[in-house]
Length: 117
Length: 110
Image (tube, rainbow over all chains, first blue to last red; front, side, top):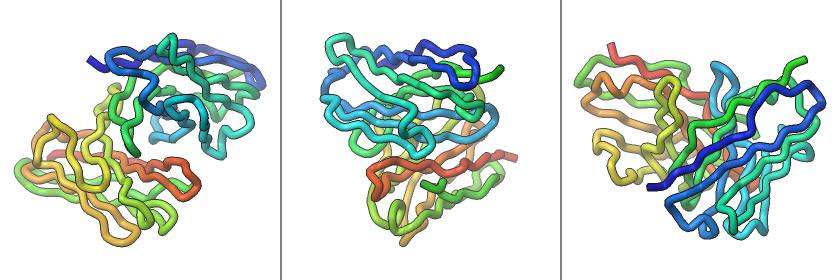
């Protein structure tokens, strides 16, 4: 069955960096775009980034543009999110979600990122 | 990239129908047939309930339906059941080639 499993979350100081990973299984990873979506504690969903199936195009929310980089290794069935210059407002549960057309059809359980001094 | 506008909360009794609205602009909801709806129970990951305005994924109850008129999309749940109590989020593709979510609506089944 389709699975995406996030990892790499943790506590980091403001200005620091963190790299999240998303391991996929149960589908042909190289055929699908993948999204990152985040949810601050007690808040709603916020779309963060998307990468096309072949990695040729990356799209970002204005709130993270220039600080976050989405990438993928299709040979390893893994998606990444490199997060630099982290701010307290980046504190959230980060979800990886498989794209299907223009919607997100399978979501992981998320990995928690806490930015705090 | 302003969030789509949803009511903060809606409620209904078992067996009733409710509708959740999702208002955007001509650059997102009004400009594309790419509105989707997600259900999220507390502590759980979101689950897609409707995609491309009105399509239901396999396995989603036909009590859930979607529609769109102009810049406003709607999710209707008929025959409300206790397990429908959850947060619901709309989402749309945008002219900036990004995606945007609504602020979320808490559904309470009385």
